[in-house]
Length: 308
Image (cartoon, rainbow, N blue to C red; front, side, top):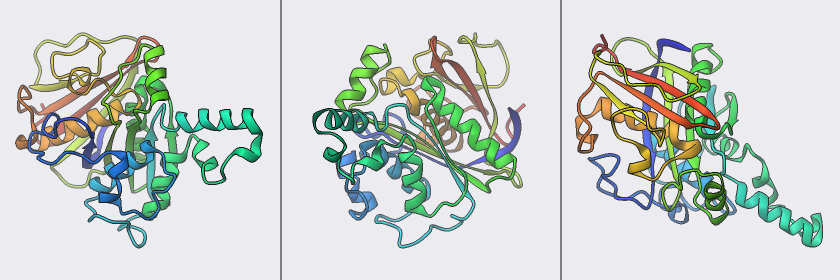
């Protein structure tokens, strides 16, 4: 998929438990963890919500520029807004807990408040309900490429006219079961309190801004080409590229990695004050995530007017 018709209209990262300026140099306040999400989202509606759901909502809330507290109704332009979420382990702890309860005492032992969280679509549906989004609602669980797969699907929805904008989210928890599954699969552990990121994609009208140029899949990490415009290269434990790597910055990202990469690249391309040490000004960004088992995905973002 290629073309410059999709604009990254907003982007935010929400990674509690790390220094606030590790990813966004201008950040001064640490991101709230899932247990403190009420300080940003308000208390109503958070009971029984998964940690990954809370982190995802925090990222969306900030990307939309909303004040603290629960929205009293649909947010502006909610009608026709799509939600695409990538998470591989978002509700795995609840699923395992419910299985244990059924084994011990049958279905009657499962709380009706807990059961909805067993749905693989719980993060995407919770976001849509909270903010009033009525467009397509998709959940991506495709392994290490999931984040960029979600970005690609969000761009498809915008380009095809199925949605006038797409809220694309990546979120992964850091509970004991998720950590155990990562370790068993040889996946990077990620930050200690989980992570989330959000990019809002919209049709590119007029000039300026950061455009999503392309997202594509490939079998193995690709060599860095010689020459060309100055480029930010952001990988995630793939051993590709000569720029920053999420494996070093936060310990990886798994299903959230691609969205986190896209959000960081959009911020770094737009605002020099957000770039950490070692990230130089550039006209474009190339993002790569994936693994030997899941394959790899690469996205290219360009600052409109600077690309050559």
